[in-house]
Image (cartoon, rainbow, N blue to C red):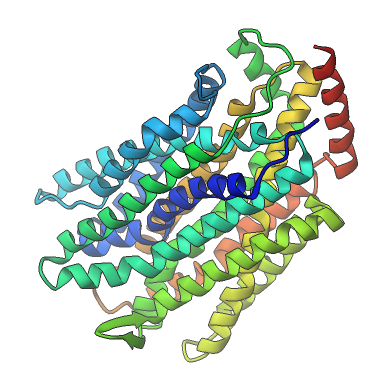
Length: 458
């Protein structure tokens, strides 16, 4: 008998990704802009930093996964990491958006150190958090629901962060410098993140136990993983999907500041709300709609078909985005809305499919390496952002971008390409990979029944 997951627990599970996503969205949308236009670093140097630091951090994720798989405590394998890493997560996040008065080289070294530390801390809390999906419930449909809760809260957290950050910076700027205002604004968000992580720790349970409790061999786990075809396919599909998102996200602020010219949309009291903020909020709201649609649509037509359909629509609309003029704001926002719905649909499906792959691996090998397998989801996320983030910085430099100056036609065209054709390449490749994914709903159900029989016999 599988314990039923209560609504309260689903909400608590969602708190974890709400916290992660608040910072992750700041990194994806604002960090490159912060480094170039606030901290004063060159775009190409930041792109290279993203590549170097994120490659190391990407390789660090499987280390965290294997460590979590071997953890045994009164709170389980994965929950202790959420408890103990929550406060360091908030502190390092604030330091990442801190701007000490250093030379240009000193600033770059500081950025390398703080960003590397932030990404490692992110791995230490997010990989165990992601792995919880594989141990809260063994039921595939329940996992779809949990994944949808997770992503709904993730996009809600992103929406909150995007809605808060610029108004907070504006508010704190009235009594201090812009650099200090950024630090204080991020500190407010960091406190919220810590509280959400602690709520997640307190509200979830680890139910699914391995069939046999034996000390697993890392060599055997890695061998099983390297021979796991569905894992490789999903890893590549996830990387390509994240490249699609990271290039679009990283170029958004530049698009509105230098192409649309960041026109003020309206005022809330004395605070100006720009079109860029409104555009990001619309995207996050649409992401949430996509997450809500993911589970019922996938339960009806299958995860694979749902994923492919969403990415086809996103690819086509991204390409068409290139021909939208700066005066066509209604169409710009409409395209953002539909593309973001499609992006919202695919990510809960990815997380749910990783849980299916953990079952497949256990069925095939007799050993359960949930943390290691789920670390790959974080790894694909990091690697996708690594390539996308590095490309964004390099492309800006290649197109002749100069911070806080009027951009030439080459830079403006380049920024437009980064919202249209260039991310569409990533989404198209993601479609190709997911078309090869072999675990259908019926196959996953057969594996779940077989594993349940083994557990009863063990």
